[in-house]
Image (tube, rainbow, N blue to C red; front, side, top):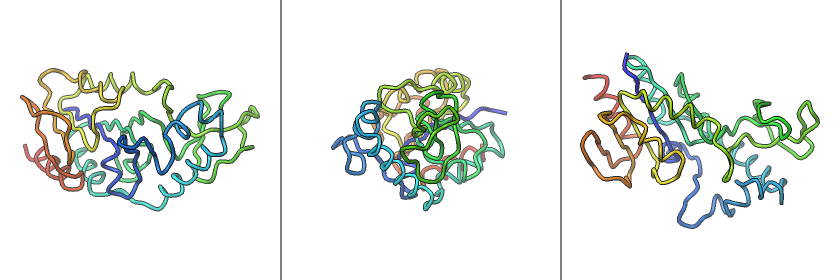
Length: 226
């Protein structure tokens, strides 16, 4: 069974109604990104950071996977599929995909400041005073700017084994995720699905300048019928 590795970014979740960070103005839902997504921001104003992620968590619980997420599940009928996502939502899980690597953490989880391996499922509001078993404040289980990406090595390892690579809804401009492409074997076919693809077509690369909800079903149909 061939290995398909799927790298997804904000574009696939935007179609479900998830608000995304836009590099153009450096704002994320009205906030300077470093205020709500950096260790310094957390240190300076933890209440603001918690409020920001509480609102995002609340919004996430109101949306559903879209046709892009759902179509990827169909690939598991014929391939071994691993999804490497830059997104912190759980829409791939809810769609039914079996294997997902979250590079940037998960919105519906929190972790201890005392022990970063102590991770808890969390769907309600997270407040100052919510402590782990070590009496340490819980924080969002999100990889902030300036922090290590714990799942990067696992993502590199699986990308090195890819027989087919599918990239969906990402600019491929943000590292370290953007660097994953270089780890795919040289002759691996690559499908790039994005309305504004920031990449040039070349051998073994097929570009679909479309949204995920239309582009992903086309690629899935092609791969299931080869």
